[in-house]
Each structure stands twice: as structure tokens, then as C-alpha cells.
Amino acid sequence: MLVEDVLNLLNIAYNLTECRLIHLQNLPNAQTMGDKAISHPKLHCFYANFTLRFYQFPDFFNLISLRNLTTLSLEFPIYSIPADPLINFLERSGPSLKSLSLAEAGPTLLGEELINVCLTTPQLTTLDLWFRPPGRYDVEEYLGPFFERLCLDPEQRDIPANEVPILPLLQTFILEMHGDFPWHLLPGMISPFNNGIHSTRRPLQKVVIKCYVDLEERMNDSDGSESSHSSDSGDDEGDITPDRKSTPKHERRFSIDDRLATINKFRRLREISYALIPDWDTYDMLWDFGRQLSTFQLLLSSEYQSHHEWDLFELSCLLLDLDDPQ
Image (cartoon, rainbow, N blue to C red):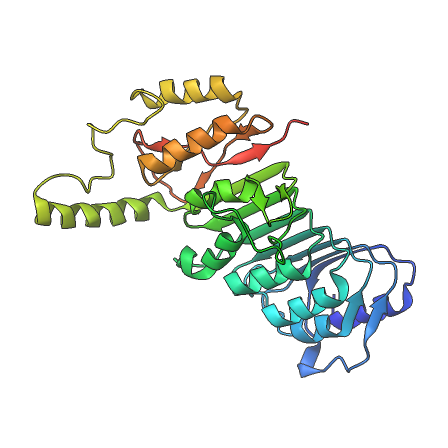
């Protein structure tokens, strides 16, 4: 569908409440959309899947206002989402927005841009982010500021009285990305915060974090680290398998099958699969944190981008899916 057809539809379909667009296309021959703004009074749900190179995104979203919008879902299979037009659109249409889903190949929505998106949509109860960029990218560089703002330091949860954490009403958070999530920040997303007036926490009911990891690449990186350690110290501290002398705080060293069965029995998991946690301290933190969440049920899942079998070592753990059974 051409973007001009969508504008015409929004202009005449006054009673439209839900709009789903598949493969939205540019106008041919570099035509422009004009400058006539369109404000739709009743549209609540807007879903759009864009073609590979939809370069007229800024023009399109600068022209429309959906003041009663409650659900927005945008998917870019290759092209990345321009931040400024999206934020400007949300400033006009986002005060009532409850659910936001962004899937892009970038990400061009870097940490600060994502923070601005969240500040513009304080009523959000559901945030679903899907970042699938080609090749490797630095998670900390791209998304670090957003994670740090979303996940307050669990040791320092006091914030100034004139500030509120982003997304204070968030109930569902879903993140899919390439790379490793900063697991040490996770408790700060769910734990209470204190702004000097009262202590509260987000009313989270579901948290899903899924990281896509290339195991061959991880193995190669570890092999390089091992070589470096071997040349410096002559020991095998750099091996991808943790030192056999180390022991997790909460359990003895079981085989993978025994260990997963133990976790499964303890948390009543419905799914079992694997993920890689970088060190025992992080593993212990997740274990402690899981035991504290009496109102949550832990469900964990992961996917790997690898065509080869992998012998998981004993520091393997499950990725996080927190689901409130209520």
C-alpha cells in the first residue's frame, strides 16, 4: 500500500478505530505528501510493517496525529526507525498510549532516544523492543544509558523528589536483541524505588528478556581470551569452562541435567532451555533475586544462532521470563 493511500484513508474514515498496514511503500518518483496535517479522532490501534527502504517515514509521521492512540506497533525489517520523527509523533499522539512495540534492524534508537520515547509516553503499561541488527554491535554503547535509566541501581534506589523513574506504570517488558543483557541491572527494574515522598515499584507482571547469541563467536572470543591468559600466567583461567575449584553459592556442582531438574522443581518452570551467564557472581545474583520474588513465577527461554551442537558448561543458566501467575 502506498503511503498516500493511507493518508487518504485516515482523512475520510472518521470512525476507524484500528488500522493495520502491511508493507507500507514510498510514493513513486520521489513525490511528496504535501503539508496538510491529518488528525484522526478515534483511532486507538495502529500497526505498521514497512518495506525494506521506507525513506518517507519522517514525512508520514510528521503529518499525522492520533490523539486517542492506545496501541502502537512499528516493524522495520531492515530499515531503522528515525528517532526524531517518532518522538515528535509521540508528543502529539502518545499521552494516552498504553502499549508500544518497536522492531528494527538498527538499532538507531540509541539509549538516549529510547529514554526520550519513554519520557514522552509515561502511561505505557507494555513495552516490547526487538533489536536485530546485522553483525555485531556494542550493547553497552547502543542501549547502556536506557538500561541504566530503566533499571535503577538496587543499592541506590533513592531518586530526587522532583523526578520519577521512566515508565512508572509498566506492567509488561519484553526485549529481544543480539548480545548480552546486563543482568546485574535486572533487580533495579523490579525493586522498589524511593523519591523522598513514598516508596513504590512498577506494577510489573511480566518481564521477558531474550538474547540471541552466536555460540561459535562466543567460543572464538573465549579461545582468544584463553590464549592471552595462557601467555601471561601459564594457567587455564581463560578457559570458557569455569575453574573447577569454584562453586556457586547456592548449590553443588551437578551435571547439567541434574541441575536443570533442580531448578525446574524449585521454580515450577514450564520451559527449559539454555543461556550463558558470564560469571558465578551474576548467577548467584539471579538465583538470590529469583528466590525473593514471591509473587513472580520464573520462566526462562533462549535461542542460539548456531548450526552446531554445543556442550554447555556448568555455568550455563536459563534466560529470564518473569510471569505473575495472577
